[in-house]
Image (cartoon, rainbow, N blue to C red; front, side, top):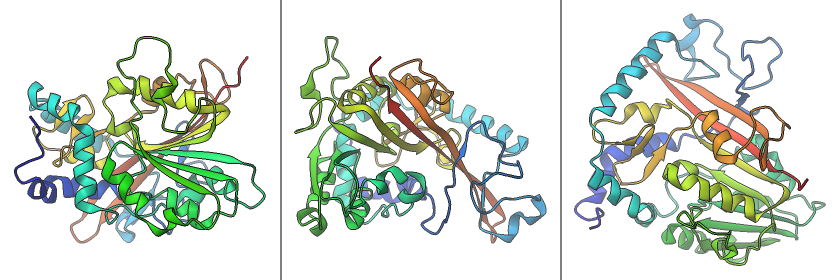
Length: 358
């Protein structure tokens, strides 16, 4: 039984418009510097270089609409624990959860059928947070293959295509929602890129979740050979997968990357505002929820990400197949001055490097 019938648009315009609208509030296009800070950094240190607006006195909180790197006070954390407890008392039933998990791609497909390319904005902040992507578009850059998983409407691919000067840049956009891939393919920039090449495929990052034998290269996207990709982009992707699918996702990522290749990741952080706004009958599992339109979302800690990629917390320390090149958090305090509300956003950002063969 599918759960896509019977007023999806009405449900979407209600509960989902809240959570996904919040999700789309990525880093501001207007920011001039990276807004993330290493998870072990002291944001109050006088020599910090992250972010541009620091709240030094609580008395100033209402003077701007947003502040960087604000750690919530104890009373907020107490409120969070109370909210999480109430959420846990009304979990999604096992039967409904099974439907959401079995038809995860269908819900995203319905989302893109409904919104085409009008919901998420192009990620103009890529040059600040992931300069590695922009470097690959320069005219003197080496041959580079960038594969974006969960490409959606192409909000990462098209900003890169629009500035690309590298004729040897190969961009591959993948999504497990066929409608998303169709949206990408329908754009003029896809059909006639100024230089370089762009391809788009329907593909599930968690392919092979139930495999028990040796890795099968057929699990990778069409035309992608093992060890052929320089950069894999995972922006708000792992959060849409079931935690049981993370191992396969990391394995597929590892297999497609060249030694020394990079994973560039950005996703939702633990206790981000949308997590706290979920009401009853939305909790699938700890920190894992279903939105009003049936799409799922998980909220990460640094420890979650280290575990998924088998990487060590300390940079350049090798304990697994990936090295941690960045583990950072982007905290934003949003202020509604009219209603006197303070809202805390949390995003995780990480960069992992596929270890060279020893």
